[in-house]
View 1 (cartoon, rainbow, N blue to C red):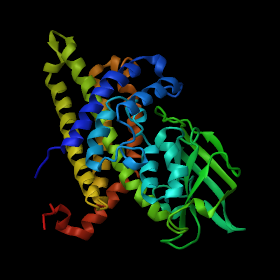
View 2: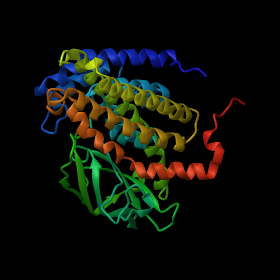
View 3: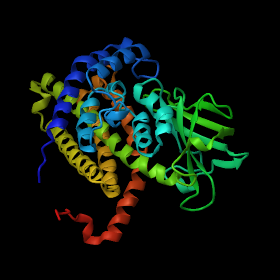
Length: 401
């Protein structure tokens, strides 16, 4: 087995590391660069994005012919981890959710005409996008089969009625991917549709207040009351919405993990630096066994997470779905992020609980990791199902032909 990064992936990893250090961490440290929702404000974001484009560190998930870097999933794993050393890093390099997953799936599933209209403006940074799937109970969440928002054929167009909520980025998005029911068929009953914010027949009901800091555009509740969508704006076929969600959500879960590993490493960095500098009762914190155990546990969890992510990325690059591997990574890395954030706050004491570092920001953000893109319990069910079907084959290494 070869655990070294391919040369191009290592080159970009180093470039991203240097760019974040030189350009993004200083912005993060300057509170005047923050907006009211604890993300990077519009003016410094525009400047940082221009620098990222000039450095050739822009849209790593998008094919080169569409204005991105065309990186493999393995290369993206190294890239995203370095990007999220800063809480502002991914959005500055155009690899933050939800645009990240939307650009990826549009580059795979959209027609060339659809890509011209709906993908290219997101790649360039001209607009932002959102993925509208989750619904209030009793509608669909982790289970797409429960989706109740309906798109019905009327007069040669699709007319949408229903409700969505916790739609990330919706308050600032211009381009939307909407998942709605087109029939009661269990496999072909969902459709995936594209619409623009200026189209009539829908509205943002509210920007839902949340526990943690927010992505740009927040997390919104949407109402659809007669939104009309043309056939040209259907992704794949009218009954291919479930397929589209599967294409989008698997890799998106993994890129979440890639970014979360960057945040986890940042937490450990904050904890270790303070432990080396802080002395109590004549002993540096770094020399206390309790602190060493806490930091060692975090370091081990991060490394396990990196290996799980890389295995899943490698399988995706090989053309596999990697469902089991993605669920393994999702649950472990979500727990790891929370562990590392909690450790950073604890080691730093009152300083960790304050806003003098980003540890408290990451701590609040980390709680969502066990919920978004499938709650931890759902992924545990996936793994149990895999083990039930595969038996001892669950542990298979795979081998060259």
